[in-house]
Image 1 (cartoon, rainbow, N blue to C red):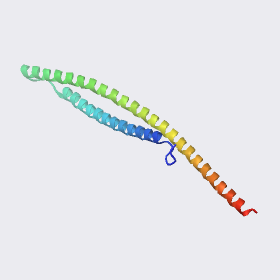
Image 2: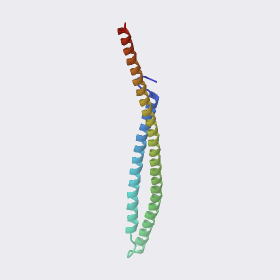
Image 3: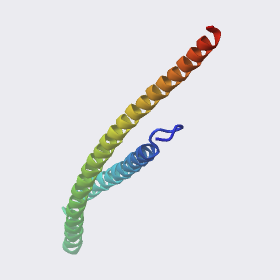
Image 4: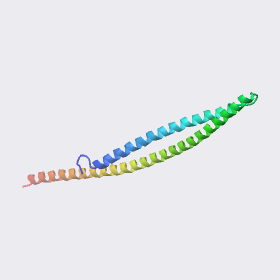
Length: 143
């Protein structure tokens, strides 16, 4: 072990895990924003086909309105599928973030233990050094 840093590779791994957690958090935020955008679009599409009416119009206009309504309904259905897939992606991103956080926590825990062991070993070595200095000093004084 390095006297200055007891576990450099473990420290590096902890940094990498922390970056992974940050990256997963960013991905989750992007997924959530995309899902919210899709939800708003879905609400607008649902509103469009609900508000379009065909009553009291000329036959050609009524047919055009019905075609419009049908197209909007089909588009809304496709968007519902997209939204469902997006929500699944959000769930996967949440699970990935949770797994990354757990991995980071485990590595962090091991790193803390190693740092504590290293500090204990340094204190012990320092105590031994002080004891040796005191012993030598005492032996010099004794006739």
